[in-house]
Length: 354
Image: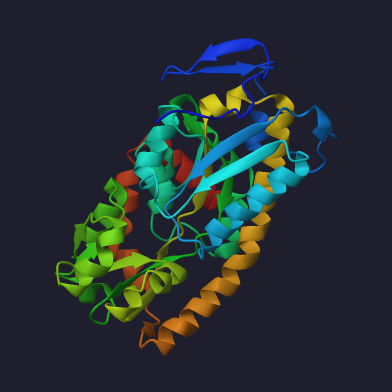
């Protein structure tokens, strides 16, 4: 598809040819320090909106408009426009118009799209370090998770895939993932023989197998029908996704095992980022970090609301013995110890906040 990153054809004087062959004109190709993407100072240098060149950035995601991340991205567009004096605009293609996260992440690499939303599990296929978020019971509590995600460790991780064609510039809360199925799950023994839909990664697949179930890498949009028709027995996700996908209608038993905390990310193409001027990068980063705060404000209320509405729709939520689940999944940590890079990140995360 044709790229239309810059809306002003007279933008600048220096041509750069993208991989798909369209020329982008820019007056300033000075690469902004990667440190800005890793840790943005609280007090940003002032900028003049009148000096910012006109630019339209295209963002695609697979979320419905009611999703809190989709709402945060809409707010990002409003803030970007305001902060730039109307010069920087965000054109959003939601609800999977351009495909799922795997497709849109690949489009960033091909320079056919500027930004997208991707979860840590989805980014694992491109940068293996993100697999640490698939490790069950890695975080002691929500405070520990937030300290890692929004602190030095998390910001450093967000910059890792830059040489692979994209990097993250904002991280979003996605709660804890729990299992839900057509039958009660109160212990690992209840998982035996079940077919559970997962975001297929080596870590998540192994997790399901260790619990005695079979991983089913079914597309997210097909889960409802697959459960309804008995192709699978359940899935795993956070409470808002469980309710808003209407999975509550076909799988009314939720085990609050809260095995993983997998964040979502706002991801930008490396080519797009490098083509922005330093001032444009600064404005975009400020708007992105503001969207983190806004999304986090929405999340807790959305979880509480989703649980209430799910119960009204007939769902039963079970408090489970997490100790038994942790013990069953210990082999994942034994396996990770043999991976020097992964083990180093796990140790850093476990040490944070102690």
